[in-house]
Length: 117
Image (cartoon, rainbow, N blue to C red):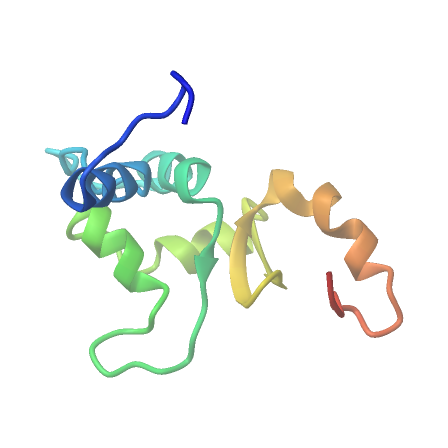
């Protein structure tokens, strides 16, 4: 190949992917609040919702994995205050309210969901 090609190991690729998802940063030292959740959503884009709750509901897992202990009611409060909204994006998801305009084209469809590529 040309000079543009960079070879990396599987270990390096794994570290890059994990860092891109927010696992390379330290957890907040103090109390976790909405600011931390907003930054996390800016980084990962959405939080998938699933009613399965073997340990906790699935939307709590990304917050705990990246932010540590957090107020369990932060997502419902953010939703009630219209900071985030629930929509079937790729899956049932919580998205930042600024993504609403990006989803309007799908919301306007008769079936309300995307039907293919």
